[in-house]
Amino acid sequence: MKSTKNNYQPANQAPISRRRLKTKPTLTLIAILLIGNIFWFILWIWPNGNKVSGGDEIVATIGKEEISRQDWMAAMESRYGKETLQTLVNEAVMEKAAKEYEIKVTDEEIDLEIALLRSAQDTTDTTIQELTDQQLRQKIRAQLILEKVLTKDVLINQEKVADYYEENQSLYNIPTTYRTSIIIVESEDEAKSVKKELDEGSDFNVLARERSLDATSASLGGDIGFITTSQTNIDSSIPKAVEKLSAGEISEPFAMKDGRYGIVSVEEVNEGKSFTYEEVKEQINRVLALEQLPASITPETFWKEFEAKWFYGEA
Image (tube, rainbow, N blue to C red; front, top):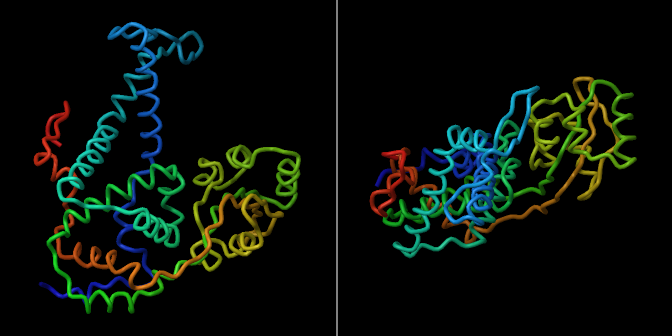
C-alpha cells in the first residue's frame, strides 16, 4: 500500500470531499425543470389515460409569436433532459449499491460533510446556495455511498489516520457560519435609499436582483452562501457586519474597501463545532483510501452491474 503521508491536504485548503462535490451552476435549474416536467406531465395524462392534453396551451407570447407548452417542454427535454436523467439514474444506482453491499449512510455523516462544505466554501462556487437543503443532502448521500462502495476493501493504517487528524485539525474545528445575502451599491446615499425600502417592507432578494452591482450574487437574490467572521477571501467589511447580526436581521449600510457600500442580511446561523477524532476517523479513512484509487471512477461505472439502461445509449 502506498504511503499517503505526502498527500495530506494542507489545512488552508478545502477538504477533498468539497472539491468532489462541486457542480455546475445549472444543477438547480435542472432540478427545478425536472420537477416541473413531471408535474405537468402528470396533469396532462391524468384525466385521459395515456392521451396527453393541454400541449397547445400558450405559455408565452413575443408580439404575435406564441410559445406553446409543448414547445416549452420539448426544449427543456432537449437542453436539460439527458443530464437530469443521468443524475436520477446515478442516484438510483447508488441506492441499489448501498443495499447490495449493506452500506449505511447516517445523518451524522451527511451533517459532517455539510459542515465541511460550509466552512470551506469558495464564494465563486454557488453550489450550496443553488441547492435546497434536501437536494444537497441527497447529493451528499449519493456521493458517500459511492465512496463507501469504492473504499470498502481498502485497508488504511490507523496511525496514518491519526496523523492526518493531527495535521489537519483546523478542518474539523468548524467556525460559526452565517447564511448571508448582500446588496452592493455605488454610494452611501443609494445604500440609505435601499435600507429605507427594506425598512418599509421591501423584499431583500427582490431588491438585490434589481439594485445590487454584484452580478453573481444579484442573480441569486443576493445570496453569497455561508461565510465565517474570519473569512479572508471576501471584503473584510462583510464579516464585520455579519457578526453583529442574528438570524433574520439586516445590517445598516456600511462602507466597503473599494469605496462602494453594502447591506447584508443573515438568514441562518450555524453555531461552530469541533469534531473529535472518533467522530471523523471514518471520514478520514475514506479520504486516504480514495487517494489510492483512480480519480475517474463515477457512478456510471456501476450501471452495468445493476442493469441500468436509458434511451440515450451508452452512459
